[in-house]
Each structure stands twice: as structure tokens, then as C-alpha cells.
Image 1: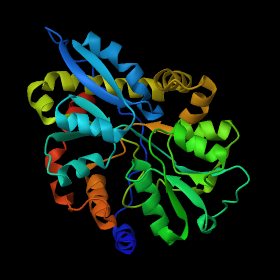
Image 2 (image 1 turned 90 degrees about the horizontal axis):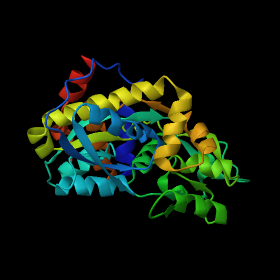
Image 3 (image 1 turned 90 degrees about the vertical axis):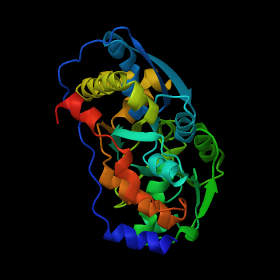
Length: 328
């Protein structure tokens, strides 16, 4: 499976580089009466704009009910079940849902990108990709960062079975604890837990093991999706949510200190950790239908998704929300 993924990765077009948040158009007219949207999210730094969105959306006649989830996968399940109108999900979740036969998710926009580094345990040598061989590496099977990592090691010619992949269940704190206990030599995780491990002295950024630039997966950290029902019955409210979100991205991109503050507010981490972690993130859409198509094909080749749904992605991606909010 990994050989076929490598072939695909080498032939695919380069992933899009992280971009700045897009400039928004003047605010749309408020809805009357107000409309409620139920929005699912996870406590991760690249969704920091969500800390500003409820107040902005309220001015536009949209009342948000924010529902916290531990994982993107749980938010995806709730969205597909009809419990949510909008959710932050992983870039792969559209392909996963289509492969499972569900057509009720509509992709809307990306949220941001960043460089991703393997986090090594303090004292462990990780100067090159070859140094992974024989090491115990904590991963979240099927997670967004795992897809990035697996694609990258394949492109680098590192056999996946040359190191021991240790499956970690649950939230990011479990990865940090595994690193602290010495159960693993490295972790493939997400912020703020990467910076937390480093700042607490348990680990370090292995700067030569950067895995966000694989040709098939790219640097996107997540995306905003909506239920088809919400797109059809609450379109005006979803449009205003998207406008508010992009406005918040624009605000935080222009003010690093405020970005760090919003990061800390959403995730609950120490402001010092939020300040350092936010420096790694570029807010704004990275993902595109073309990139999602490459991901879908790669995941099928990897054997994670049993059906190649790359040809269906565009039917379930609606770029009009962002276009209306930004004028392009």
C-alpha cells in the first residue's frame, strides 16, 4: 500500500502553501429574526478565530451554539448525524464521509496551515529521517497529522515498518504524557500539545523532520464544513457565519498578540505557550478541491479509505460562501 502511495505522491501536483486570511467585503445586513446555528469545534489553536466569531455573528443576526468535541472525527460524526449545522473537521473528512456513503457534508473553506515537525523526546537523536528507524513513534491512526506524516515518510523513502508506530487514543495530552514517561521516542501530534511538550522540557522540535509539505496531503490543518440541510435551509445564516469567521481571521492575522490571546482563550493553555504556538500558524484557507482530490486518492492508495472518491469531491464543495464574503 505504501509503495502505491509513494508513486501517487511523486506524480501529484505540489500542495498549496499557507496563505493569509482573505480580506472581507463590507458586512452583510443582519437577519431578522435571528437564526441559530449549532457549530462543532475542537480546542486547537488554528481555530482561534472562533473566540471572536460569536460576537461578530450576533451583530448579523446569527446566534451561535458552540459545541466542543475532543476530535475532528467526533465532530464529523455529529455533523453527518444532523446534530450540527456547521463544524470544523479534518481535511480528509469529506472524502471519508463520501467513501462511507454519506453525501450530507458540504466543504466550505480551509482554516489555516503551519509547518509540522516531529517532536522528539529530549535526549533522543533525530537529525534526519533515517534516525526514525528503530524508534517508537506515537501516532493517532487516521488523524489529520498522521496522514501528513505517513505521506511524508513514504516520499522520503523511509519504510513505515522501519520504526514502531505506537497508537495513542484520545486527546493531545496523552501524547505529551507518553513522551514524558519515556514510553515513546517521538510524537506526531498537534498544537498546543507540540509546544507544550517542548516548553515543559519533555521534547524538542526535530526541525529536519518537517512533514507538512507532502505532495498528496499538504499543509492544511482543518476545514469548515456544513450539513447539506443547513446549506439549503439556513444559507443566509451560514453566509454570515463564514463572513464573521474570515473577518476574525483577518483581525488575528494582523495582530499577533491578539492571535495569541485568542489562542489561549479558546484552548485554555498558558498564554506563554499560546504565544509560542501561534507563531507557527498562518490563518487562512490552504485547502482547495484539487488538494482534497489528491488527498482522497492518496488515502485510498494507503488503504485507509476503501473507495476512491476523488472524482466526487467537487460535487460536495461549495466555494460560493467564501466568494461572497471576500468578493472573489
